[in-house]
Image (cartoon, rainbow, N blue to C red; front, side, top):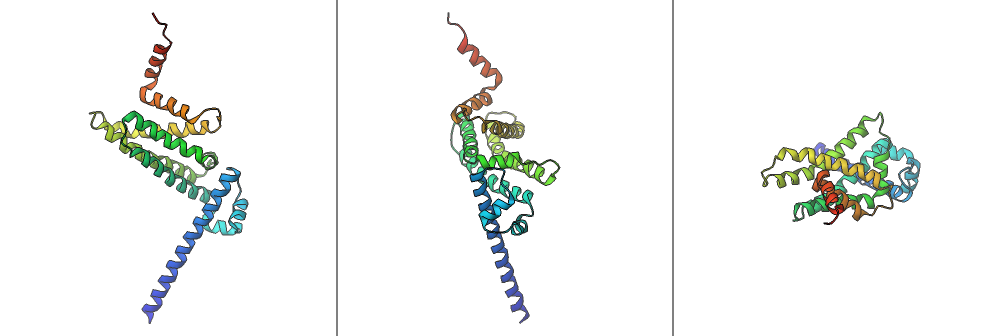
Length: 219
């Protein structure tokens, strides 16, 4: 009898846990709908209205806006990593692979601009949990390029230790450029991709040499 009661309790606990997780995802979906529709400055009240719940219920699932931020960052990161992994798995020459990876990143940012603004422009000053979340986000995004760079460097006999700093530099640069680019409606994505690919592949010296060659007077 006692064992049957314990089994029933475990089943009830699992059902409650499952339902709570499902409800949290429903609330997260509602928050993302509002952010995509109304922009990054949405309030918890507005999200509650969209989800059809009161603010205390939102707090029960996320704690506060910081908890919501971290949940949105996790969803955003998962979806972005899926896009990047797909691009990095293509069998392309190195330069084209670099461009394809940048294109996957900036296409995602362009499609999810309100969410990107919400994550990049939420004030994290004095909020260690959010600052740690952002650092963790960048570290995880850098994981895929690190692996690919190491695989590219090894056959060439190059120092594979460069893979980590290069990957982090690539992610940091892409994020900074994305923050600038979303406020530059006159810059087409294809132009941005070509500029960045040329800079990353050729370096400043290569870019300047190409410019000098292009602008050199014919003899």
